[in-house]
Amino acid sequence: MSPVPLPGRRSVLRGSLAASAALTLPAAVGAAAPAFALSGRPKAGWGVQTGDVTADSGLVWVRSDRPARMVVETSATESFRNARRWHGPLLGAGSDFTGTTRLRGLPSGEQIHYRVLLADPDDPRRTGEPVTGTFRTAPARRRDGVRFLWSGDLAGQGWGINPDLGGYRIYDAMGKLDPDFFLCSGDNIYADGPIAATAALPDGSIWRNITTEEKAKVAETLAEFRGNFRYNLLDDNLRRFNAQVPSIIQWDDHEVRNNWYPGQTILASDTRYTEKSVDTLVGRARRAFSEYFPISTLRPGTRDGRVHRVLHQGPLLDVFVLDMRTYRNANSPDDQTVDPQGILGAEQLEWLKRELSCSRAVWKVIAADMPLGLVVPDATEGRANIEAVAQGDPGAPLGRELQIAELLRYIKHRRITGTVWLTADVHHTSAQHYQPARAAFTDFEPFWEFVSGPLNAGAFPASALDGTFGPERVFVKAPEAANVSPAGGYQFFGEVDIDGHSGELTVRLREQDGTVLFTKVLQPGLVGQ
Image (cartoon, rainbow, N blue to C red; front, side):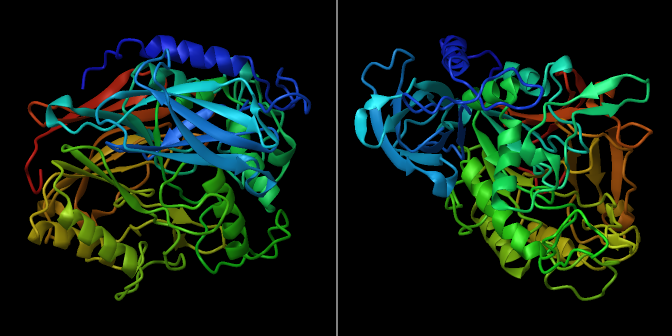
C-alpha cells in the first residue's frame, strides 16, 4: 500500500486534535493540563482509539469524566454527511468510565471517519464536545496491499513522559508513516515500575517525568492498575496516534509484574508488594487491560475472554496474536525432557495449529510477546530460571522448546506458507534467520523472526542466542550498557509492507525518528525461506 495518505485524512486528524485540545486532562505533576470540571457536559479528554479492525468491523474506545452514554457516528467523509449512528454502552464507575462500541457492516478497504459523543444519561440532548478519529478497514482486494507497524515496551524502567524531550515522540514518527494498523507486542504499561519526578542521567543531566499518584508505587489495586493505563494517555503524541491508527494489542508480563507466571507467590523479601498472590494481581490487571483497550475477544470490565486471537486483514494477511503469559508453566531452568504445557499451554497450541491450517492469507504473521531463540533469563526469585523459550543449551529441544519444535514441525509437514514471527520484549532491535542446517533440531523449514522496541523504556544489550533452532543474527542494534534512557536513543519500531501486486513482504527496522536501519524482502507462497 502506498505510504501517501488518503485525501482528507490529514485534515480530519487536525480536526480530531483540535477537538481533543479543547478537552482537559486530569492534573498530573509536571503536566500543564487542569483537572476535569465536574459541571457541565461529559468530556472525553483521554481521546479515542480503535482496535481489532477487520474488513467489515472495528471497535471504538473512549473514556468519560463522569457517567455518560457513548454514541458513535461514522461517515465516508469528514463532513459527516449521511452519518450512521451507533448507540454504545452506558459508561460508569464499574468500568472506570471507559467503554467500547463495536461497529459492524463497514465497507472494506475504505477510510472511515468517526466521532464519539458522550451524552448525559438523564438528558440525551446534553452531549459533550465530539472527539473525532479515522481508520481504514482491511481491504477485500489483494491489490490494495497492507502496511503496519509493530513495537512494544512503554514507560519502562522509570522512563516516563518527559515533556523536555517532547514526550513519547516515537508515536509522532509512526503516525507520519500512516500505517493501516499498529501491533503492540506487549508491555503496554509497567505496572511494576514506579515513575519518579526526576532521574539522573550518565552525563549529569536530569531526566524529568510527568508523574501521577498511581505511578508512585507498584500497582496492586484495581485503581492503581487503571491509573497505569491512564498515565500513558497523558501523552499528546500517543493520543494523536490513537485517533489516527487502529491497534492490535497483546500483553506480556509488565501489565502485571516482571516475569510473572500463573500460581506464582511473590517472595516475602519483596516488600514493595503487600498482595503476594500473583493470580490476584493478574485478575485486577486483566480487568483494567480490558477496560483501556478495544480488544474483540475480551469483555470490558471483567476477567472474561482471552487475549490470543486471529485478525484477518484481507487476502494478504492474517495476524495470529499469541498469549505467552496466561497459560505458561512456572519459570524454571527449563531443561525438562517432557513439557506438554510449555509457554502456550496445550489448548492454545492446538488453537494456533488449527487457525494456521485454516488460513488462506498469503502471509501469516505470528505475533509473539516473547522471542524464540533469544535467551531471556529470570532472576526475580533468586534462582537461575528462564523467562522465555530458549535456555542457552544449543542441543536438542528441552523445556518450552519442545512445544515450539512441535509447532515448527507442524508448519513444515502441513506445508503452511508465509509464516513470519514478530516480537518485542528484549529492548533492542534485531533480525534472526532460523535454519535447520545450523540447528540441533532440524525438522522444520527456515523462517525469520524480527524484534523491535522499546517504544519508550530502557534499552539493553543484545540477548544471547540459543542454537537449538539454528538462529543467525543477521542484524542487531543495541547499546553496550544496560538501561540506556530514551534520551540516549535505542528506541525502535518495525514496519511490515506487503505489496498488493507482487505479494512480497518487506520488513523495515526503524529508529525512533523513523530512520530505516535494516530491510529484508520475503517472497510469497513459500513454506520456508
